[in-house]
Amino acid sequence: MDMRRLLYVLLAATVVLPAQADEWGPVTISNERIAPGESRRFSFEGTRTFEGAFIDFPVFVARGMRSGPTLCVTAAIHGDEVNSVEIARRAFAGIDAKQLAGTLVVLPAVNASGFRTKNRNMPDRRDLNRAFPGNLNGSVASIVASVVFDGVIRSCSALVDLHTGSNFRSNLPQIRADTSDPRTLKLARDFGVGIVVAGEGPEGSIRREAMKAGIPAIIYEAGPPYIFLEPEIVRGVEGVNNVMSHLGMTGAKPDAAESKMLL
View 1 (cartoon, rainbow, N blue to C red):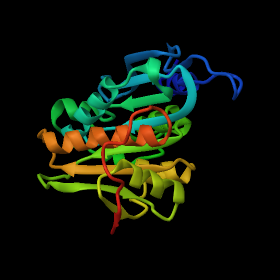
View 2 (view 1 turned 90 degrees about the horizontal axis):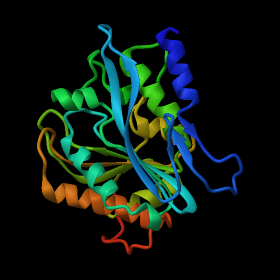
View 3 (view 1 turned 60 degrees about the vertical axis):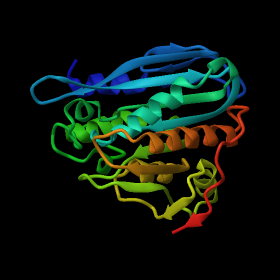
């Protein structure tokens, strides 16, 4: 079986939900079965580089005991944005699947190879956040984008994409969102950072392509690349928790005021 055929097989088996809309049972992601009330961490092998090394990325899934939305959280689409990884890790670690309604899917290091090597881009030197929704017949970045988007993101009810500044630039904590969409504006305000920067986002970004697919999507931008900043991490974790609370996934009370300043 050639590599592209293998990828098609993997994608076909990536997300399997219960057959009936009113049926709540296990979810299967990348051949990993997660039962209601269970949390799982595993690795998904997406494709290979030109020299044959696998490009993989970790997947964290918490399947609630009760029906509800599927919130997806992505981090380190740019491999140098380490704050985002820690936000994703802590947000998932704080969830008790037995108390959860719906499903939380966290991809804490989408560009895992870049994260390991402190490299912003993919091994083919392309920006992964300009490659969505991807193409299985394209570059390494495009293939990974396709596996992530078709295999996970299309099954999401909402998306929170975590980022930092680039090129040693530190970003003021902010939400970026297409505020022309009422659901996305609500998601942005629910996060609770205080500042929302309005815009569609660049072509090929995961946020913009998710919106095209009908999925409300926002970006949380905070801090610089390469280093951990505790205040921005804490604020990001609170924001993810706020979103889950507003979506009815948890009984927790939101920790921060809703975002009010639109730019």
